[in-house]
Picture 1 (cartoon, rainbow, N blue to C red):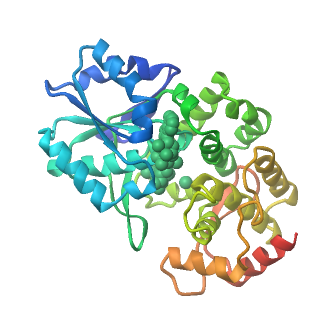
Picture 2: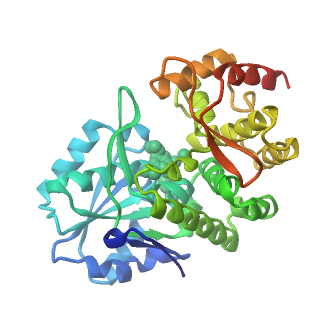
Amino acid sequence: MRVITVGLGARSYDVLIEDGLLDRAGEHLARFTTGRPFIVIADETVAKAQWPRLKAALDSSGIDSDLITLPAGESTKSWAQLEYLLDELLLREVERSDHIIALGGGVIGDLVGFAASILKRGCHFVQIPTTLLSQVDSSVGGKTAINARAGKNMIGSFHQPSLVLIDPTVLDTLDPREVRAGYAEVVKYGLISDPAFFGWCEDEGHRLLAGDSDARAHAIGTSVAAKAAIVGEDERETSGRRALLNLGHTFGHALEAETGFSSTLLHGEGVAAGMALAFRFSAAQGLCPAEDAARVTEHLRAMGLPHDLDSAHVSASGATLVAHMLHDKKRTGGTLPFLLAKGIGQTFLDKTVDLKDVEAFLDADRKG
Ligand code: NAD
Ligand code: MG
């Protein structure tokens, strides 16, 4: 078993990673029992696919439990579902000293984390992430949120979990397209600051996507360790360090907005294309070797991920895409901070980017 500690003083916690961990979850959760049943929250899909395993594990440790199910999908990160969840938790008389358990992807993790942060002024929670994206990214770091009319993740809190249990075997029931989308966030850690890990991705990434146990464990462990280090340094994104995790997200967000945040382009797919665009833009600006940008593009292409506007199903102009970026950041013109690269593993924040250059680059990049 790999154990990674997120070091945040009194709020430090462990992330455990091991095949089959879900079937032994009772051993790790027993220390949180208070005499009341554990309340587990899952979406309907995960409830069918993985709850029976967790229930059996809790039963075999003599731990009572109760399941609350919510609809699957991004729209569950809403006021309506938050209100429903809080009422269900209050009906079950959850107390501040209790731990509630998020069993699911980033949607359930973000919603349950937020509910835990406000229920009776805050109770504890445990993350059991069931998508590759949530295992390598959203379950670690304590960002919780629901969506608002004004945009995604606009209402939320920082509330760290007490424990994160990662069982890579839960990915066996996840749609392969979702696994591939989550893989974009794995590659991201190599591109931010770990060129050797990007090289590993080039060599072994296909084994991860095929479900190889060693490859999954290495990729998840490396990603969680990278995220834990960043969160330990900059929990609330004040020094700029945590902002590096948004590599590819400004370009990617524009692509997601243009495709209506729909199944045309999953978040990780937008991030994949966004990272390729950020590297090619960096090369076009003379900041990054063209060979590095080409390696990034080629790897994402080889893994079946979007890597340019066409493969992201986006036909909009550079001007339209830049307008989406400005809208996201609530700006009206001029400039935006961009995460660019001096090379693979050398991402930095550039506050001097001219949006006219971004527009011209996007139009030229499409013509290739
Ligand atoms: P998700 O939670 O919607 O899961 C994707 C789909 O897979 C859902 O339909 C779900 O029912 C299904 N599913 C999940 N696990 C499964 C399994 N093991 N077997 C079968 N089906 C399974 O989406 P996601 O990609 O995990 O998370 C996206 C969310 O994460 C977004 O809302 C995003 O804002 C958030 N996020 C948060 C952070 C953070 O730091 N808090 C970071 C990144 C993303
Ligand atoms: Mg992301």
